[in-house]
Image (tube, rainbow, N blue to C red; front, side, top):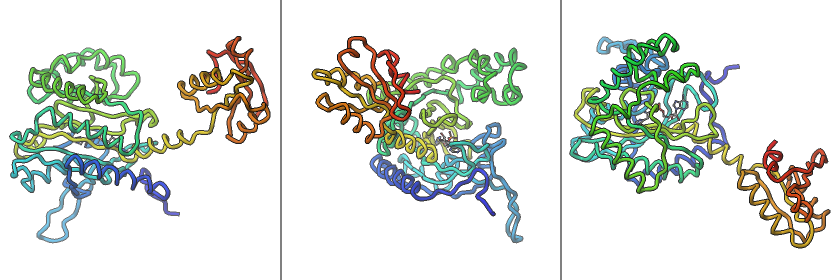
Length: 425
Ligand code: HAM
């Protein structure tokens, strides 16, 4: 049997409904923020990614699908081509090629489509995966460098996640400085690494020489205590970068966008300057980043174009859909506890206990003191509750409740303080 290639997968109904829902919702939000769609080719010349993303990154050094494309006619040359591992380099190439900066306005572009990286497949990590991304870039006279652009894009991200209904995300924010202040930080890192390099993994030993910033990306547990003690980038930002970051944060505070500073987040691509960010989600396990992005003020020039500072992000759509599915499953989670008020005056005690259970994450429902015991149990069974919790006069006084497992029939008295843990097991 011929199967889908490792790291690729078929998206089938009914899952495709959710994918289409997400696409539809994000297009609406992009339109409201005055973004327009760009579609760039699925493959580009290898040099674009080598120069744009960076030779020393994991993406370029080990994850790209690259092939030598043979000439088919005397007029053609053979060339090295690569399936796009990300879309920012392609968008900036297109911006340069079509002189999109000529209007003097900001270009606000979005894309939805597949990207390719030869990573080790696991939950939330595929070799063909989908990104929903956006880039805003333009000549400095259009205000492309200003902190309001950073804040606006983060504000749009909260609107995008809201529109698809994703809850429970965390935004991590950092500034990685610029071409002016990064060399001093790199130097400080190199010096600090010189003393401890031998204790680090082989990859880090190499990066310590070639691109020390990449050491901060290392995920090897044994390396972490050493990396934690390395110099922090925040201490090396020049005045302009520090000021830029402070303004971004001030606007976010006014917009009440919640974030946490993570000084180790340098991101896995070399083009970043100043603001970098990631949104994580607890349901995703090891691959917790649902999206990532940041500013890339020098990328256009690095690719031979005009000065065109910019900022953007890409949402991993596979991961967004996984998180939404987990949320949906949780919303449909079977009832954990049915609380039974036993006798007159017990409703208020029962409802208080139910509220406590719900507040600590337990799916719970509550009966009524006018129900007979038999009716209460029948209701609990019909609702598919795993446990019933009985709240009577004695229980309230003892602050311990009779809990019955409806499947096994086992009954136990559980102190109020231990109830949540007992029901969760
Ligand atoms: P990135 O962090 O490499 O950034 O990827 C962005 C998101 O794509 C990740 O947070 C993750 O959700 C998803 N992703 C990456 N690799 C995989 C994979 N193998 N399988 C599934 N999902 C994956 C970029 O790509 C930048 N171009 C983002 C950007 C735009 N920065 C500025 N503008």
